[in-house]
Length: 410
Ligand SMILES: [Ca+2]
Ligand SMILES: [Ca+2]
Ligand SMILES: [Ca+2]
Ligand SMILES: [Ca+2]
Image (cartoon, rainbow, N blue to C red; front, side, top):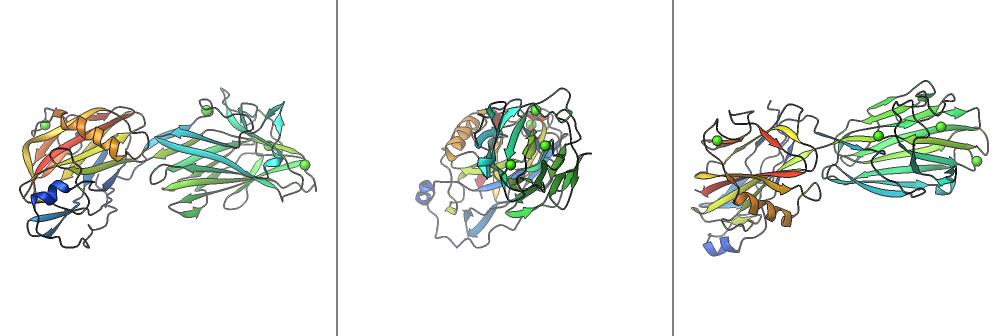
């Protein structure tokens, strides 16, 4: 399926370059910075790379125009911050977890003096005292407070996603959003930051003992037992580019000094987007700088890679259409999957050097179809079986899959 590309024309503002020499070329260092997003569907993913090479003067090329192309915008890789897996020192108000290749940080703020212990264990902490009716019972991040006055005091929980470009499809349940007579009334407000703008939940599902009041607020309406689902509230943000979730937890009891209240924050589910990255190198592996000047006739090695910090990607297809003035060199295809996924969702230049070294001596691919995962037809390079009759491309968990294409500048 080919969807309209969310792209912008290559940068036409690259200034004219002086006459190229091999010396200029050999001094080149750095990289061509072009990043495409890769969306994974349960069945397949398909990407078509867009041209990122712009001609700047006769016989030379300015490498450096940026493009962002999205051709198959479907849910990507599911991630879960699971309280049955993670640890939270009791009473800590800030913890960071690595999920989906980058950090998810949870930070409590507001009136932290209102936090209370449960049976001698300071909150917040992980327990299963409020089950939300789950069977089998699971852990949640338990929060207990006792505010000194009605409505004026609150605690906040800020969840930051460090993933490049943010995450999307964030969903979680709060358990035991309820009240007890007028002793306490739980109220929670949920907002997020998506692509730099404040947003409200796309969906809030309440239960028998709470209600969805406005665009982003849930309030307890009756008493829910600790093992009941009647206090559950499930909040979803289906926006893309989510960098932060903000939760405000307060007491709206009419009492001037309300009593102890408690909730549990269940597992945090979200999706990450994988990126297909394309870089350019000289034959010897020296990265080619942005806006480098290259003489015609020199070989250039384009490296495409997918950093997969998550689980197995079972059926992925890639396509790169070379600009007509980059001529594919016969025998110029290699691929590799021997490098472990990068430490963060975006690989560093040093990690890219490692990927390049591996794929530069990786498996030689054949140009024909039907015999391996890659093929070439004219200027079109296909990987996987979505667009050509190649073998299926599978990208194992926690690994980098890389392709090297050797071309000659015409
Ligand atoms: Ca869990
Ligand atoms: Ca109180
Ligand atoms: Ca409660
Ligand atoms: Ca082949």
